[in-house]
Image (cartoon, rainbow, N blue to C red):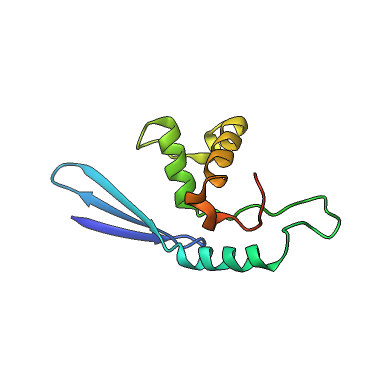
Length: 114
């Protein structure tokens, strides 16, 4: 079984395994969330998240792999994890549900409700 490893700029690692005997391909994706979580904690405690003119607010920083998982949950399909293919209204609904939950509080970068 041959193996190929790719790592992107977000630290997302994709291990691809090629099974030449069965013409199959298996992908395992992983990402180290610790640096993202630590940075989010610093931002959360830094200020209220608003820009100087109060026109924009920083809300969250979510790892790419988590967005893929949320897209797969929504699509009820483990092969369809394209977050950016979801309609904007669906993305917004998922983000509100997840980011207002205490289960995902470490993705928040400022206090308040989404």
